[in-house]
Image 1 (cartoon, one colour):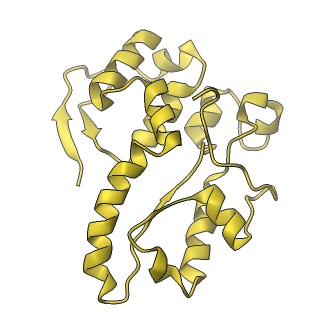
Image 2: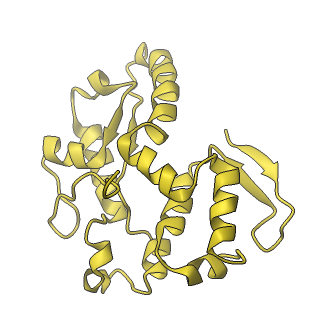
Length: 183
């Protein structure tokens, strides 16, 4: 369940979600190196985006991504929630675990780089991205795993699951887990 907090600037939206599943999308949008993207998204400028992101998450977009990549932000919350649900559902033979994608090549990321799915390879900055289908293939591999209950209550990176289970992204690659350079 998301906690909603009213937000007075109609140019950005009527509400913003705290601890929302959209945090990754917000971080991807903020991480795209294009000042125009901030303005196109309804912010006055890039510093406005960073300040609003900090107000929402308590971190700048760069800090958020560094912690997410190192597993201390996003996965910390996932672990706590995942363990509780796993305990409740485990007795019924239902697995509950979190799957953490890398830097996904969403429509928003592609738009921020002024490209599309057919031409993203022309943008070197997108070389480490993965398609949304890579995450889907991870979920499918977990669903087919007869030992999935042993993973219940834990967090798994899509990149690690790809190596473990032998699946690839749509282009045949197995992108590495996303990390912030120098973090």
